[in-house]
Image 1 (cartoon, rainbow, N blue to C red):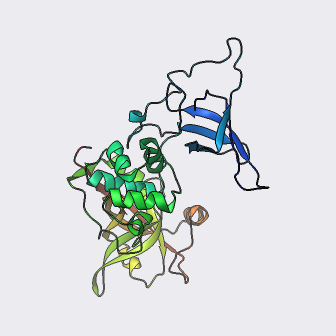
Image 2: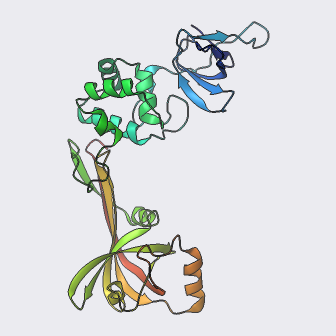
Image 3: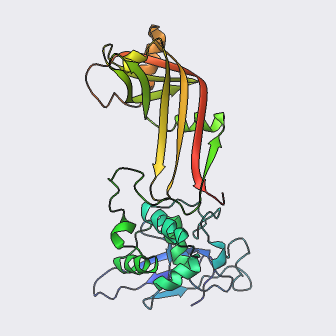
Length: 308
């Protein structure tokens, strides 16, 4: 089977009375026009990677004088261009992997396998494995069984069994590296989260308490009650910590901000914080006292593979 950009692909149903499916070929992966293809389906307008079966055929569309055109180098892609970390996915869109794809990629890299090696062991096309790793795919049970066997793991693990277990109990990277984050990276990561931990010295001793927080300019702010443990932060130097663990990739980061905490009393400032809050406090109850921390020191670290 060979096709050109703009051709129509039709999948005939083998079930009597069922509706066939058709779409436009919008992406080629081989210069000679052989499968797979990126297809924009007429019924959903979605683009998916298609490996045509015996029930599919191509309707060639004329592309002007000369009866057709060769795919340009920018649209024809080679299988070896689809790698983890490549700037584009097989569909031509930026990589946006789903959880299954991220787990598959992580297991493959832990075992030092290329996509071609893993695909051969799993009995699938390397292009399809690239698609699984780079887009939110929904592989069949048979595909997952083949991948689990190829990667010496289980279908349950690839599907995320144990995702509710405490973070950090998975396997570490084969060769992890701890790198320091610069202040700009730290501030950017602080603004991505909504729950952090504030470390205070309370009447009962040191305490670390999770709080919902907002980042406004260069200030970290959270709501609490006057008699609560977090309220003990007011008037003293405290530490505020945010972290993230990517269990599927065995990576993570943490950011620590240190500064003096104060009560926010100016009505305009309180109103801005209330209006800009992403959520009411998860702990519930009456928590109308805003505490602000302007960090004097911000540090952070990230765990990455040694080759990054």
